[in-house]
Amino acid sequence: MIEQSRWDETIVDANVTYHLEIEGKLILVRNVPARVNIETGERMFSPETVEHLQKLVRSRRRPVQTVETPVFDYA
Image 1 (cartoon, rainbow, N blue to C red):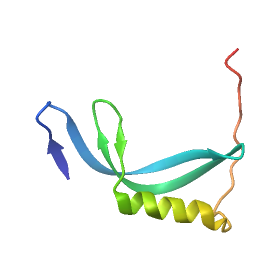
Image 2: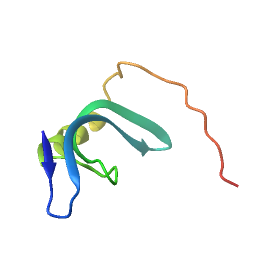
Image 3: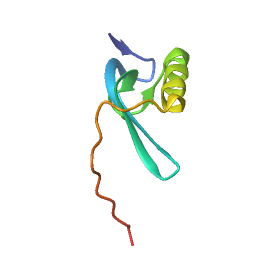
């Protein structure tokens, strides 16, 4: 669904990859439903989606995939 806001922003429904860091570990969750502002890239999640993400991360169940991630310091 595409929605035009009163500020001439375009919001679309999309599946995104959600990322967060817990105890120094990067966690990725793929295919998360979100509403995305095309102009700014801002992602908005429904309360139900946020609740599901919290339960998923707390469950500590085995991930479907593990990836190696390079890390750089800005300095």
